Length: 362
Image 1: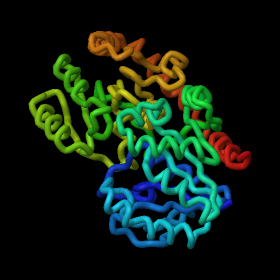
Image 2: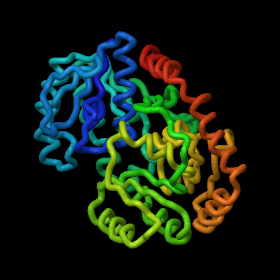
Image 3: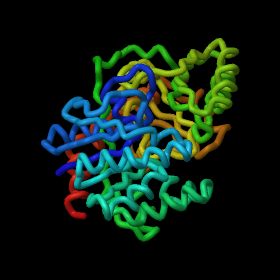
Image 4: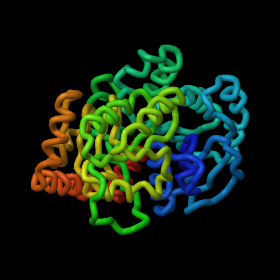
């Protein structure tokens, strides 16, 4: 089976790029592509043009330069269509796979009858299928949702998402994300009390973590915050520089970030929307407890006792952080629960097989 992943920057994960941090969906595309290649599938990643060479084989995956389709500028997006078509014609995939929202899903759906492939959509964020994205982006969101409904296969990464697909009249296959491989053994020493890792975007609500760090001046805090929204990032960086108990880091390549989870006692998530965050996986690998305001995929925090879900209560965020940091036994149990989640839910081999079953049955 020949599978082509259409992903802006997943190829940079394979390259272990130092110049750009990778989003969660891009990381998972790269991991899934590598696993499929190891199983003997013919796998291609068509990536956005960031100056890379075309037709480079990395870890068994062919990477193609598909032009500047990824910039978000409508003129460049339209100008990239001939290049995308050229790559699709040359590669002749049986499946084209898109993970996460993009108006390109509509274009790829429109090209499908002429180029003879099937189209698969993997839901990365709950808001992509709940209608939230369409409500906030009526035009592009409408095109995207139109295409989601007409894909040949759909995949959810949580059981909660599978229920939303069903409620909205769409079939899907459920599989869980793959484990992020380690580059070094786990450190046993926990020198950071609170860790926050995410791109700087309004839905991630980085200022809430700064509020927490400010309210707990004796807690050792670390924030890894790659710039995406420049205005927001400037405000976060300026405020962070004034907090003596906070270490602020702009970006860390994905293959180096695990050590930060390893040395943290608690990982804090302040996002409004997620699917199954890679950060939760890496927290589990690092035996790091979870403190989440709105994100609790499939109720994992209570299922495994891996931390605290505050239900978006700012008061509970501060109160529960103090409580956990002040109770070593409770903290240890939560850290063990986080580690058990990874062991019990994230069998990469089994989850790759679940993913493939969705393509085979379509």
